Length: 252
Length: 252
Image 1 (cartoon, each protein chain N blue to C red):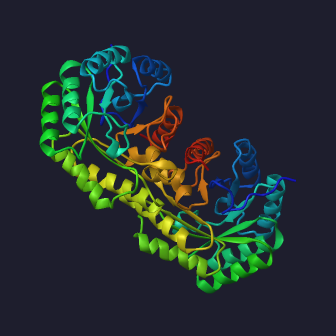
Image 2: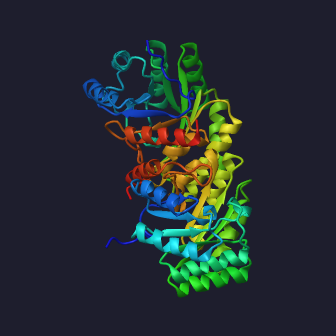
Image 3: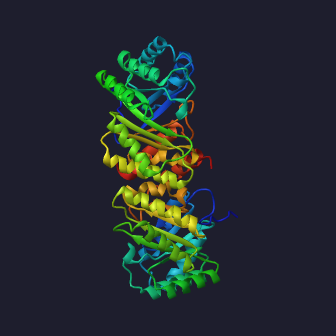
């Protein structure tokens, strides 16, 4: 059996494709198309899932998705409306409980948890995830601006301190200086922290951060298989091509 | 007739291939191979040319090379041993006089002049170049380290102040922080100066600066056609591929 890839391992960032289907049929159709493009990992954006409030339905489909994906790892994500996700009826408490159920009742490898979630809830989810062999990707998104470099480093550090297994920051640049700031924060956090990082500067201006971020310490980059989930995501094929060229040129 | 490309114009950096042959036959053989890979511009590294001390031979071959290159622009460069070039018998004075003769007696578009050259000689070459419709690429190379960001900006600024048409800085990183520093200096200089810039962080660690430098304001990147002239130069095909992907992704 093929070995699953792990965020933070390997010589180049994993290429992750978001799945944004509204129902099982749509997500499976997406997956079928996306698999041909050979992503390293997929993210199931369950905030797009119509029946996200029905825990049994989510768990049942989570198991189905994992079965079809095979050794391809999955990140289960409910992106809140505060951080660019879809509007859903669940409270933060309910979201965390649903993520905990995913850890308990499926073999999905990763669950996403926004750093803005109350620390006790956040830590509780990390504990449950670890007890069940799952990992938590802590995340912070800002679609309006790029906080200053030190603030981004603090957020990544806090994620590690609160028990996350992976720390993610996705921010919108207002200038190319912001793109440099994100790369520089990534590099410093990479030197300071033990857990793998996922960072990106969004939009057209930030797209190069998705291409060279791996050099500065980002372990995963999002790319479009069928549908984009945030501005600036390049097609999977392009990202694979750029990684291959960078690796070859750097002598990795 | 096809229009020549100009450094600083267009939506992506020009890809420049160095020619390091020792004699006319070798340079022409290089050019023949390189032309198939479609560089945007070529650099004739005349410090590799065995008869560089024979002005008539250099001018005669300069004319021949320009004839064969057609609309493909040429940079005439005698890189000094101080900045990574070959050991030759000419003094700085003689090098500047040879560059001046290239401006006067050939249709070669650009001549390279190191910033370390005495200011009066440097300014004299700029004057002669402009009187003859040629342009001067001022350059600073450091194969040992990356000076701090402000020093690099000062050097680029001084090049403009002394009359150069293009300002080039090529430096060696000792850390990834140095690569960020070079990109950041490029961005600030681009905002401050009127002339086009050429900047790069060398070696394997710096190779991504050759790929994304254009986004931050570098107008040209060196790539290997047949032979490399500095550490970290990727193959032409790879650079073209990366530029195409970046342009597409940024929506340029």
